[in-house]
Image (cartoon, rainbow, N blue to C red; front, side, top):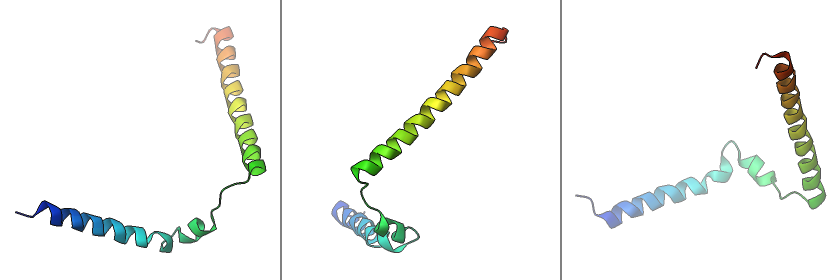
Length: 73
């Protein structure tokens, strides 16, 4: 029977070895270039996303109204 302490050390080593290679794989360059957005940039992205959300919701509601007035629903 394997000692539980030894098994937990093995799991810890596997986790640490995966973490060491995190910046070297396919996405390593992207992770290195990633940065926290500035406030102005964040607000602009939030505005564009909100506009898209409201447009899609409005379009869905318009389709619902058309179906409801035509008696298809």
